[in-house]
Length: 166
Image (tube, rainbow, N blue to C red; front, side, top):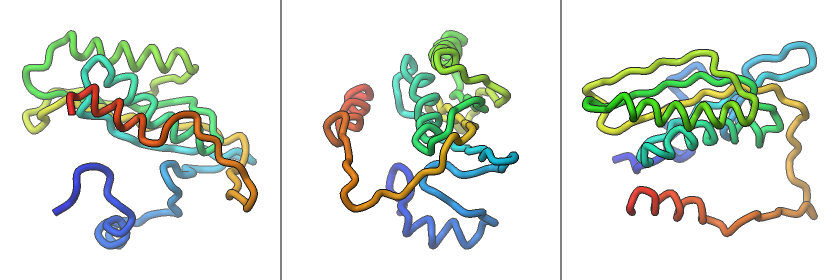
C-alpha cells in the first residue's frame, strides 16, 4: 500500500517512470523550453488538507517556491481549484483572495486554470502550476560550501500539522 504524501524515488522509478514518456527530470521543477539563452522552468504542486483560510496562500507558495529555488523568477501560474459538494461561494472567495493576494505581491499573473465542485472530492484541493524564467544555472554544492538554516529543521511540518489539529 502506498504511504500518504509524495511518493518516494523508489516507487517513482518502479511504477511511474517506465510508463510515462518523461523528459529529463530534476527535483521539484523542470525546464519546459529554452528561448534564446533563457530557460522556462515549471513546477506543479497540490495543496490540500489545510484550513480554508490558508489554502490559497500555501497553494501559491508550494509551487512558486520550487521555481524560485531553481534560480528562476516566477511569472505566471495556472490554478485548478477542486471543491467538494456543499462548498460555499465564501469558501471559493477565501481561497481565491488568499492566492490572489500572494500573486499580486510577487508580480505573478494567473493565465488559466479550472474551478469546479465534484462528488469525488472530499476536501478542497488547489493545484498550482508555476512558470518562471531562469536567471542563472543552478550549481552543485562543492566541498567546503556552507549550508545556512533559516529555521529549525522540520518546523514547517510541525506548524502545518498544528493547523490541521494533528
